[in-house]
Amino acid sequence: MNRGSLPALLLLLATSCFAQPSSLFRFETDDFWLNLHHFLYVLGRAEAKTPDSNRAAVASAPSDAAAGLQELTPGEDRLWGEAVSFYAKGLSLRDAVFDDSASKLTLALAGKRDTSSLAGLDANPEVVRTLQQAAPMYRRAWWPRHHLANVARRVELQKLVNAHGERVLAFITRAYGMKWPAEGFPVHFSGYANWAGAYSTGGILLVFSSLDSALAGTEGLETIFHEGMHQWDARMIPLLEGHARALRLEVPPRLSHAMIFYTAGEAVRSIFPEHVPYASANGVWKRGLEPLRQALEAAWKPWLEGRGTRDAAIDRLLKRCAQ
Image (cartoon, rainbow, N blue to C red):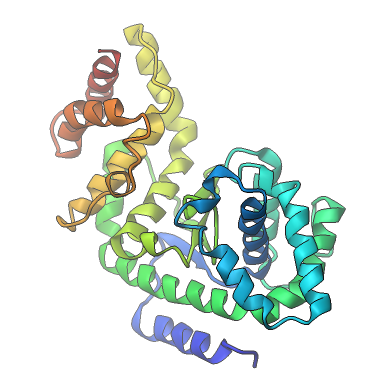
């Protein structure tokens, strides 16, 4: 049994004994390769000095890496540095959310979990070689702690979902008039994800940082539903565009995402009045979205409170945005 396995086992037993899993999400904590990839990704962005490498969700990664390097031999230290530099010059310069090749790699690695090798992985051979070379070092120096954090965050969120998930789901499905997948939405825990702490890939799965303290408690509950709502983008965005054409208006570029922020935040706040929605707590509205927040407050919130119809609310929202 490797270092850290016993505490993780105890947490897993706690999950099975005290929290019967909800079917709303499929939580995965054992994605070794996905965790390794994201650790190298954020370390590469730090080495490349990208503007977002100082954001709270990833700022601790270099010190985390430095602590783990103490457990490596000088030769392993050099090999690990080569892996980080490889990422810094390529993969880490891509956007984890919007770059197609980055998304494809995330999806491929999510299916590997904790397998012994990446044989057969549909990815750049140099990427595969780098990951496999770094794997023994990551497994010994960092994975036990990252895995333990994954399990702890899963226990925390599973309890919240079991207790309150159905109410949040009822709120957002009514608001959007859409259905949640019967098989649940996949959430893959990783020590690190990206600068935001969590992101969804094509509305297919969510990568959720287990080390980001900003995503603890009800903030984490809001985030997993927020990212799950992105699976509806393929229907909601055309719906907004159809309403806009009928009104001879334009859809503001980031309106669909602002609607998710606002709706998910209000859903959780309807259960926890003291909850500060993620967009307000983390300055999202201040990044050029304040006019959309005001429009949502005036035109969309009445529908969330049970007044009128969804389509009428969308029309009001688009007209308000046009003002």
